[in-house]
Image 1 (cartoon, rainbow, N blue to C red):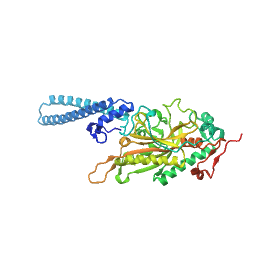
Image 2: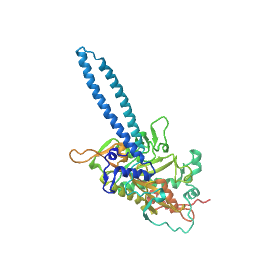
Image 3: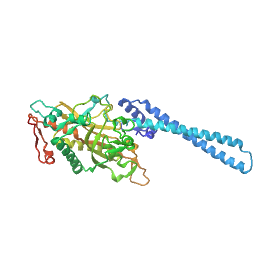
Image 4: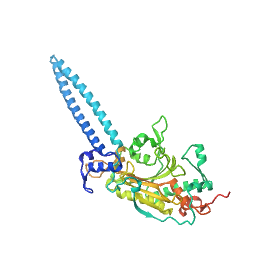
Length: 439
């Protein structure tokens, strides 16, 4: 959530020379949102504060009149005119209080729907075509034959079954069988091991079901409610990402400065309705209603969050490097960046079957946007230091299903078999190759 006090204070950013309000209006415009929302927000807050002041003044007048009424009654004097005045004051106080509550609700509703302010280093652009390549690592292998997509390879090997999943559940669900199931499980264990043992993240398996308050805290609610699966007649929702439960682990808490950074790596299945993706990636594992993901989560000191962002991105890259998968790092532009992110890098892995790079991880710095919604603060060291909001960061480390796709397509052989990456063979009981089906 945006800091309305920062908008009112309107300090100049020394890095850009722009006032905070102007920066946020520019950010909204660059995201494709209405910059006029800032003026509406400030006007609502001014009205709300004026009503509160007027209500307090009316209550003070009520107290004075009440004291005078008591005095007159004690002296057995006529207080009828004062009683009428008190009745009028009570009506005014009630009306102004109700109006102030209404203004506060309007203010909070508008605040909850406004995106984060983009960091000044986020590229300005109109869509994904304006995302900026930061670096490219590894070159696509020259396979010497026409590469197939994972769908064809998986079905010919008998390890991926889309048709029966469609019968059992519906579109965008999959059965993984045999070696594909083992490979998916191996990837989860491999990712968790690397991040916990080499990068210092604490392992976590969170609840796979969360409440609406948690989804508000991370920014999915209220704007993206249609993207989440709801359990009828409850306040429970299936997790769209481990980001939701892990971020809210510290909701409404105050950490100590010495606890920062706190880093978690979590595995969850993820569930998404894909409400806005009709017609996109209808075949294969790219866009599923249910998929596995390993998530990296960092609670950082505000002064060190951009350093932490680079580190987190590097940790996600490590998995791709160890798997020897070609990839590139893209800085997302203002129109393509997520609702809550101030800055985001996408890792895109090369898929030879599609002859293109596809997203496999998004690594975001939310600054204090989520912490403000979820009330996550820390207590700075030093006397009389007031609690401050932490900065939250997260990124996929990695999306497991898409990593499975990348291995199937990049490690395919001409006969339709799939070589198992060396680092995964110990997790696959020494299996070096998933053999082609002999039919």
